[in-house]
Length: 171
Image (cartoon, rainbow, N blue to C red; front, side):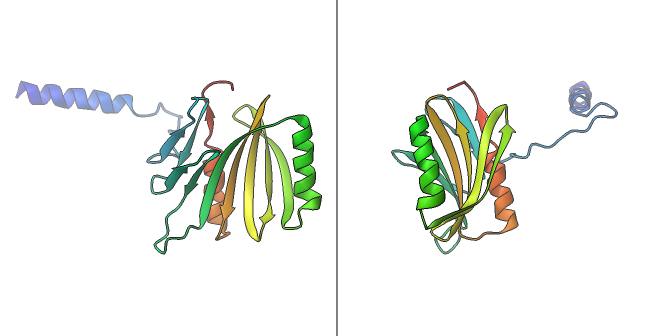
């Protein structure tokens, strides 16, 4: 009987420690149940839904949802590319004016997790995309979402994945 009472008191005190103070709100973890991808060098992590597939290739990592017919409605591609100022200028020119299959609808700079990020939205080969570019001194980290089904819900999900990045060390 004493063991039951001690266990109950311990459980009540643990539960009380988990509650918010008066006037405080507890924010639920928006990534609860999601998987975490950790970069091989340990520089960052990225969260993605647990029912998605992850594949690693030589130069990129891909994450996508699994639809019953073997297709996907959204794909996130993570690429770390070495850059120089000249390469950046050439890439910007080719993306905007020379490449007729790509249309940039919007470019927006934001500060995310203490890092200046450029968000580009547009279409490439008739596929809508949303790219987050995290520039560093010697490379740029691109996180691009490709939408086979372009819905507000998928855009919101892509943004949630793209903004889940957490830099664990300064590259």
